[in-house]
Image 1 (cartoon, rainbow, N blue to C red):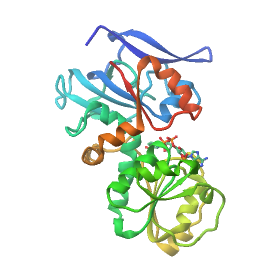
Image 2 (image 1 turned 120 degrees about the horizontal axis):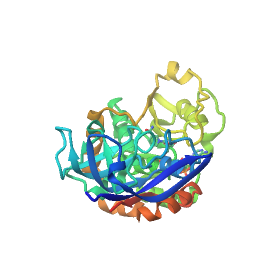
Image 3 (image 1 turned 180 degrees about the horizontal axis):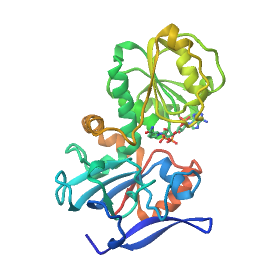
Image 4 (image 1 turned 180 degrees about the vertical axis):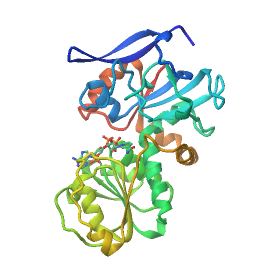
Length: 329
Ligand code: NDP
């Protein structure tokens, strides 16, 4: 551990919101029990909002963004984590309330950490990141409700997004038949290569619809919310299940109880941020078993800390497809 380290620092003084690359002393790290050299982090949509100030993500200043990280322990008051151990962190308000992963060093609570699964390298874990981990949590939720490849078609919305594209890929690996809904139908070929059997235009789902529609999908993974989620509920088959993790279309949910009380459907909420450890371990274990290097290389690009602020602007402008991995060393 060096005495000084590089970090992205967000400030908000005199109503001026800034993000810059700074060199800090490690005496400035938060007073938390586990110190890390950060090896890799990522640039998620939430990090883009934090860095550009386009969304109210950061709760205190100065803040180091970065909701995901993989690091090597350099100092530990926690009996669970030893020096030199590789660890993984997603969420828990890191990069929002607590200093996060877009830095060469971090100080965190032991409770937030998982040992990095032995089946994944630090870079692979960040190529997956919160997007892949949330997709896996969503699939496990469907499985817990009894959904199997024999149940029928599984709809994935926001299919070209981070969560959606991982969901398409993982569901296909697990033998499910996937219908992908996207606004970028011109990229249908890409979604078919990921594993979608059919690609539909997201406009079919994004406008106000009827309380009950034709029974079409056995289950769905939705990261879009609003009318899309309401229309999914209306078009699930009897006993169908939908998971909801996002609000890319909107936070509203203009649905009726009809499909719940007439078709016995279920709506399962997915939160990755405060998820209990046992679920995190299960999801990361499954990801380590399933995900292939060739896929990760196809969907991700690597940048360094000096390139993060520019990349955040590009991300918010919609100019980046796939995952951005940040090499922090
Ligand atoms: P991305 O920005 O990568 O993907 C979102 C996708 O949603 C887009 O690529 C687009 O897909 C689709 N979309 C965008 N705008 C609209 C719209 N107006 N109507 C319908 N579809 C739209 O984000 P992520 O995949 O990383 O995250 C998706 C959502 O999930 C976000 O709301 C995020 O905050 C949330 N999230 C929640 C987590 C949790 O713990 N609950 C964890 C991770 C993410 P296409 O181009 O294919 O149409």
